[in-house]
Amino acid sequence: MRLIACNRIKISSGSFAKAAALLLAAALAACAPSADFQTVPQKGAWRSGTYPSFSTRPQAATAQFSEAERQSLSRTLQAEGRQARNIADNDAGKRQAMPDAASSRRQADQDISNTLRQITGKP
Image (cartoon, rainbow, N blue to C red; front, side, top):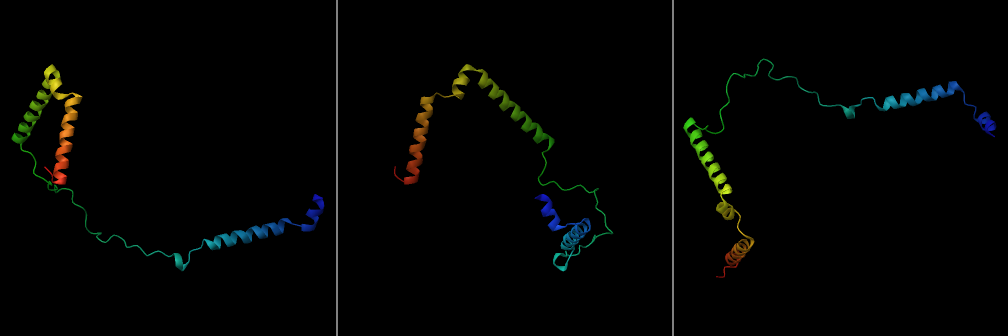
């Protein structure tokens, strides 16, 4: 049955090559540039005679710390760090830094009632 179908179609290698060439030509013609797909011409360099100057220092956005201010801030931060470490090392400081749950709840309830009084305007 297969032989009968092939004999009726009679495809030759020459006609196949012609069909492939026509298909390839149509595909390439579809990719060809047209007036619809033209881009705007780009300008070249508009300041070609000038070069950037990297020798000037940019101005700072804010005033810089002086050496005395830097030392003062450094001493303050070191003192606060020592104080924080001393509180953490001290047993009484630990209790002070971490309040118990009951006092935290009381403080939260008090803050909530104060906030509600401020919102509603009722004493």
